Structure formats: C-alpha cells, structure tokens
Length: 220
Image 1 (tube, rainbow, N blue to C red):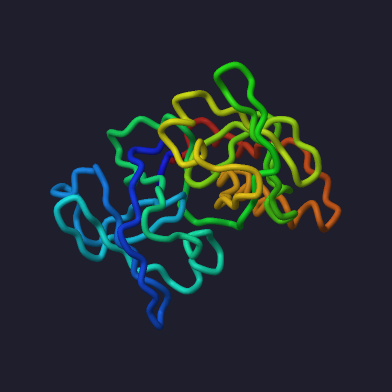
Image 2: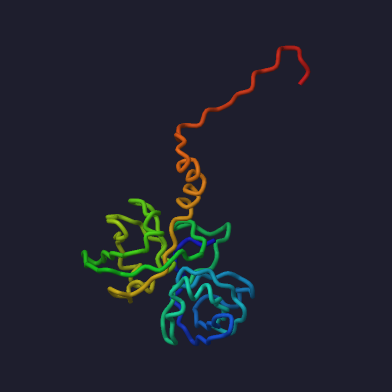
C-alpha cells in the first residue's frame, strides 16, 4: 500500500526489454542502503519489486502486463519518474490509500494557470470515469489528487506549486499520458453493493437483529 505522496523524483538510467517484459534501472535519492531486495516501490503509481540495487540505483523487473496496462513502456533513459516507498505503520497518510495497481491510462486534455497553481483537466476511460466522485480522490502517475468538475470522462484537479515542482506532472503537457488508479474504497463499495443493486433489491438502512435476553435465573 502507498499514500500518493511522492518521496523522490527519480531518473531512468536504463530500460532493457526482456522476454518477460523489461528491466528498469533508476537513479534515486531514496536511501538505497535501507531499501531491501523484494521491497515494493511505486513508480509513477505502479507497484514494482526491487530486484537489485547499488549506490543510488535500484532495479525492477516490469512484467508484460504492467507494460500493457501502464505508461511505463513509454519511458526512456533520462525521463523522470515519481517514486514512493510502501506505507508503514509509522507513516503519515497525507494522501489516501493507494494500492499501486494501475487501472488504466488517461491523458491530459488541458492545463490552465490559476495564480501560482495550475488547473489540469484529464480524460480517462469510461471504466475509470465511473469511479470519479466530486471532492473524492484519484491517483495520477502515483500522485494523490482531489477531483472536481466531473464532465463525463473528463475531470479537473488543482496542482499547487509544491506538487508541480516535486512530481512529474509539472513537466507534462496536453496530450501526455498518465497512469490512473481509481479510489480503492469506491471500488470495494461497488463490489459489495453492485450485485444487490443489479438484482433490483432496495438498499435501505441495515436493521439490527437483537437476540432476546435469557430469562432471569437461566444458566448462560
């Protein structure tokens, strides 16, 4: 699990294709001495496993499925990437709960200045648009953001100067693609309530069932 708060802007040192997908090497300011092999790190919002490391570098195997479902296959040496280590119990959840399992790919439609901030409008596939909620959360390239102005498959988010500086979103422009992860909690709610709704059952408040108390004197 992650929080959508980016810890480092890494740099792609190399990406090499393999029969199973690709091997990605990144340069990072993260404390590699404290990173263990097998540890999970989100790269642009996609959870990857560290398979090797060196001084200031980490390596991951990227599966063919990850290349199909994310924008990691678009990376080339010199590109910057958003990096976040996995959530620990002593870590502040400054964003929202993020699984690191990318649902699909969206694109930037427009960027409009608003003071020192920027209003970004994104378009996502219909499968992801169904989970958008006004003032709800969405993860774009691993960054936890708040949704507003939903119009069909398009929605807007506001990026403050700090986010523009500390993430790759400040380096992107209209037409660029981004990884999209829908709010995990919204997906669970749909999974639980969806079958009842499709079967035409009315979803009302739950009624508590209280067992009658045993008669006084009865053994418990």
